[in-house]
Length: 166
Image (tube, helix red, strand yellow):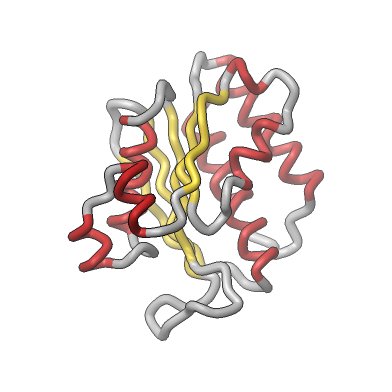
């Protein structure tokens, strides 16, 4: 994915997601950490999004991930916030705590600090799930500054939602 994701590209992608969700009678939820609500913002910038967008939860701290999304303390202790396991529990929690039929969760290291050898800046886990279905979780390694990493994360999350909504 290009690190030069524009606002116009995100808007166009959000419109596609919204149309697919509406056409297929889905409601969407987000569970966001490193994007700070940007995915939800992108979708709710679309007029008429109330027909297909249910809610967005921003859970940045360990405590918020546990309280809002049901992420287990042991998961955070053993795997950390930026992990496949945490992303999976976040997306499942988003569905449990919403009326949505589809959800996406993102957790990552946008930088400029916070990276370590096995999880450098730009490492992002994204998980998608359909209510009653199996979770898909993928790790991404995005390039660029904090803004670029976050933009690429929003785009990747929306692409996955588009695939799931169709």
